[in-house]
Image 1 (cartoon, rainbow, N blue to C red):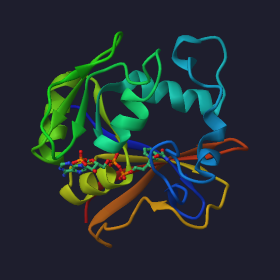
Image 2: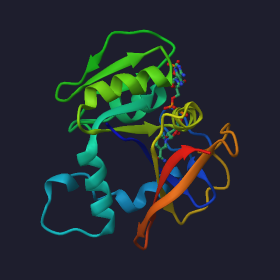
Image 3: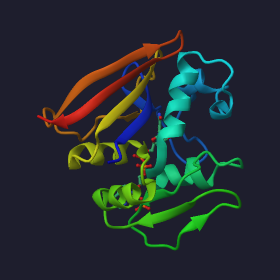
Length: 202
Ligand SMILES: NC(=O)c1ccc[n+]([C@@H]2O[C@H](COP(=O)([O-])OP(=O)(O)OC[C@H]3O[C@@H](n4cnc5c(N)ncnc54)[C@H](OP(=O)(O)O)[C@@H]3O)[C@@H](O)[C@H]2O)c1
């Protein structure tokens, strides 16, 4: 059975994007600093030669993802908005309130728009992923809904040692005490700590 996991970068003070996030300012003011550790890791899954902790984590995530779930905002900024090569190389299921036809970039896998809510999107992604796992890409509202609906098996947080002061919080609107988190791995480098939790009912 596929594992449904979220993988998301976060600042030390709990933000996944800085203030004033919007079109043209995807990660908000200063939010790019959350991902500075990953800047040179784009083609990392093809490089089997050497591997530090950050490369290991990124490669592992890319190889295990057989389908993606994301919010429409994330699709606009991280899917349709990104040039080739496509960052998402497996079928993606995009949450939206507005039904539309599937979209496929020139090279790459289809994006299917789901109006039935997060549980439906995860079910469709599980079918598409076959024996691989389902990655919940974000943004914040999508991860929050997966947690609240109880469909998330694993949460990975890539904690960057930066303070953003304000912005988009990962855990807004999540019921305190609703989920149990067991730490299953902590590894890191100078620029980031990779935290992995198994998520279950309390
Ligand atoms: N740090 C990281 O690793 C990371 C990763 C991903 C994103 N981010 C940041 O997160 C921010 C975006 O987060 P977000 O939470 O605003 O965006 P999001 O989750 O990507 O998208 C929100 C949109 O998804 C649709 N949606 C969500 N839940 C739905 C539901 N139950 N039913 C139908 N449609 C639903 C709605 O689209 P419609 O308006 O089309 O109905 C909603 O406006 C950005 O600043 C982005 O840069 C950071």
